[in-house]
Length: 143
Image 1 (cartoon, rainbow, N blue to C red):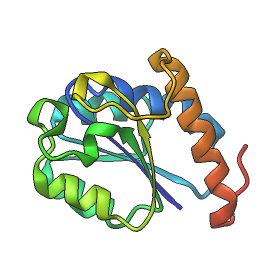
Image 2 (cartoon, rainbow, N blue to C red; image 1 turned 180 degrees about the vertical axis):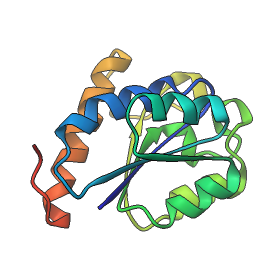
Image 3 (spheres, rainbow, N blue to C red; image 1 turned 90 degrees about the vertical axis):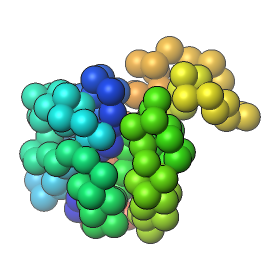
Image 4 (tube, rainbow, N blue to C red; image 1 turned 30 degrees about the horizontal axis):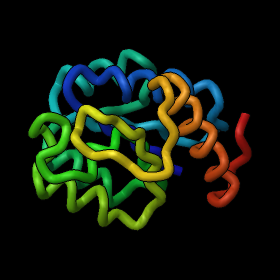
């Protein structure tokens, strides 16, 4: 199973997702990262992602091959994350056939009706729990 974490800017959200999720993944789950820039990719690799890549093509390519995608909501918005997400990336990520678990963020100018106002850490913990619930659908049991 390929789990892809996507982030931009400094990679803080992606790095935190990696550090929360990695210790709970069973053998055989590959935790990959793709950043809109090298700083974001580097942060996620330092947090423990197995492999990483940077840039528009890497994001588009890996989104189509992932079994699960996690990241800030800006990864599905054209010009999201302060313009770091190109329309091609937004289309590739939103069009990927896998489940996407997205972290709400008011900084991207998009509010989601039905979400409660939480601290970022709580959203990240919830995202990891949702990701772990997806593992059995792919034949894996969480650790």
